[in-house]
Image 1 (tube, one colour):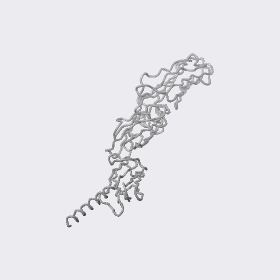
Image 2 (cartoon, helix red, strand yellow):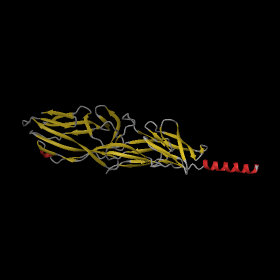
Image 3 (cartoon, one colour):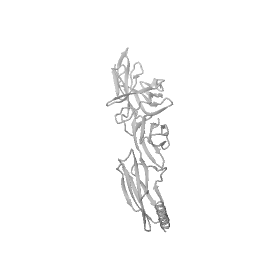
Length: 361
């Protein structure tokens, strides 16, 4: 009889163990991959235990603390609000299983790692000073970093109707984005990972708006045998100043003059630009813009008296160049004016952007 009692106790013990191990399955939303889950900030992960029979109650712990925990019964939810990024969290779901008169907690813990990526951006150049800005100049470069660094992240770029730039390499937690050479309202970089993780980094990419021409040194004002002329050396500055343009170059384009009166013989004269574009420097001049290397030489077209009213206009295209091609972003008017003429007397003026000078006969 003792042997029979022993056999019965052994049998009952085996049944209890089997009942404890029959708590069913735990599912997560989003579904995990090898107990790993990646979510963006402000997203949640739901943990649900479903028994094969009976019922369960659950509790959830998260280490380190920070995420908000809510739920009851068979389900618990961890919400990863702003401020929780850049961490890997150990989430442990404890399950108590009740089936008839049997309640079991032993071995009913399910542990998952939840990653909440933190994406930071930093411009390669140090000017303007706000390196984390999301407004970029064409061809400007940015380093994109993801924490934790042991994640598998893929990257792609999208924008509507225009080139969006490039992310290199296309996978990893430390990559570089180079903005398009075409301006666009928004360039969206998508970071993706396991468990349907997706997050966006949006940049505004802008082209140059204008070039400011200012006097570099005193202009040459000439009156030679009654022939008036002006020769000016001008400094150039590119705007806007809240992005960087060091990765592009500048040049003036070709155009043809519209002229009348005193300058009639110059009508149709071509503006011939320099063959090679010039660099944009890293010097930001307050009140002017990004200094463009070199100077511009502007001069009038010499004509002999008699002086009569007249004007000469060049609407000069302003182009930026990335080495593969050039795009126009604005024009500048270079204007020559003969005013107050009285035969052998008159005033010749030269205007270009912010520069002006005059000489009289």
